[in-house]
Image (cartoon, rainbow, N blue to C red):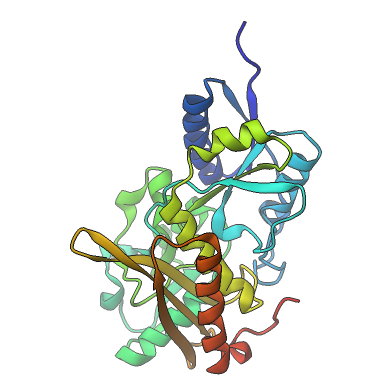
Length: 319
């Protein structure tokens, strides 16, 4: 008799189905059990408003978490950058698998690079974070661009470029790679130009805190370096009291001396969407980073950024 299938809760988007399918295969391998996808529609999927207006934090997550708590699914897969920083009672982040490429990328007409875009180029993005940094870079380097707020899935966003409505759109490299469309990237944006969203490129596998057997099995997929990095990034976001839609970028990476990893560096940025003001700082901490050390690194950098005036650049702060 075959074992009962594990039910994996996922959003219905093409990207969510693709990344959940990859996790399902990995979970099947470690548990020996079949995994079936249970598609759940979230508020973020049906609302046509800008993410910043509907309160970006958690709009793609709440319905999945409710299904978990009601016992309708056994575990759920989220894009980690969509997760609110507070962990709800009754649920546990069982695994953070190895991270995909965290960078943002450009998909532009005529295979253009960012610095080759013509004067007045219109660049679409749904993220205030990207707008702030792209506009700041353009100001610093004498580029003339206009950032345009857009919503929609990958097809919709790239469609704006194909139809000639926009000169380019900015997307996450990880998402395009996961749906097999990495070849459409025309430029990778260096993290020195645009810091990604906290947790970008990483997935979160969540289940109920009471299912010790499943927590142990899912834990086999956990990557400790990725978990430490995203813990530091999300700690920064939480200490800034900012939500997923705030113009905050963060990236923790490992600094190696030859073959030996010596330190974890955390970089953070917050800015006004027109790019006129940015607060960008970094700090380093020891590796291997314990959970507490990673949290402390994020809080330390947030304190420094707030002292430099970061709070005034984020619009509405969450409490």
